Amino acid sequence: MAFAVTYTSKESEKDHVLRLIVSHGGRLLNEGFDELFIAESLQDSTTSPKRSPSKLAGNASSTSFRLTREAQNLGFTALISDRHSRRAKYMQALALGLPCLAGRWVLDCIKQNIILTWERYLLPAGESSFLGAVRSRVLLPSPAAEARLSMMIDTRPKLLNGRSVLLVTGKGKVEEKRKAYVFLTRALGAKRVAKAANVELAKNMLEQGQQDWDLVYVDGPEKQAEKVLFGTINGEVDSIVTAGAGKKRKRGNEDEQVRRKVKIVGDEFIIQSLILGALVEQ
Image (tube, rainbow, N blue to C red; front, side):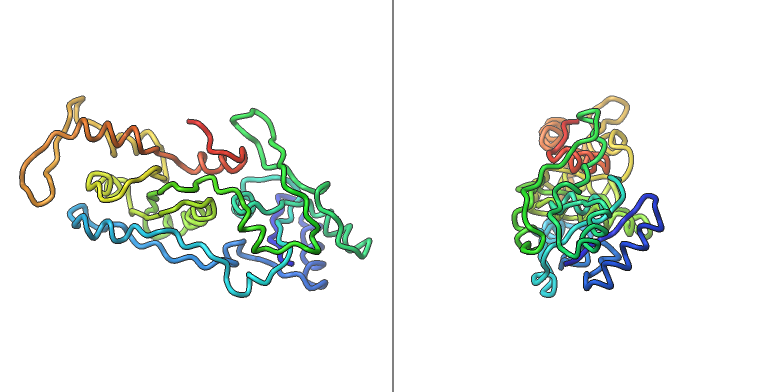
């Protein structure tokens, strides 16, 4: 069995739970559930707005999201916490369809010297802005003693199944912070994921048209990103130079077509979708 542990308070209980898991042969996932997966690093989709379309397309790779060889042999895997939260480990568990259980489950299992059914200990998904309430989770009951992580992952809901996602990740410390959301995007089943260092470079990818994108996932105000991606100059339709032609073309109609297809989203969209268990309408 393997467990990620995150507490918002009750530090003494957290320390006790951690000690019990280790002393009874459980595996602690200190960094989170991403320890269990092999995922190819995302290459920069472009580093220059003048980069050729073929190179832009070549870096937009299909998602690779597989358990490590060791993780394939794991049994029951869950998150342990004191309450629902928006912390990274909690969001990972929601994305992977893994149970989020109250720490009392560990305490009661040890006290009774048996692996208890976990359904009554299941914590809610979180505060849903769509519902205006805390949303409960509904997971198929399965005995923890018989569960296999590989089966749990294979049967998880994939909210981004069949969708392609272009992530605006930034550079340096900002990019490091965004790694958690790269993992969530892959865990949610996106068919293709690529990254751009900033919105301007993401705009270049959309203009090249070598790949279709369903979502542009930005770090920052979505309206501001939309203005950069599809905006006009002083209310007029602007023009761009076609690749290798040196001629100008009107972009208004093409931008409108892309605008209808591409959805610009941010962290809150992903978090609220995970809590709701479905992609939220914006």
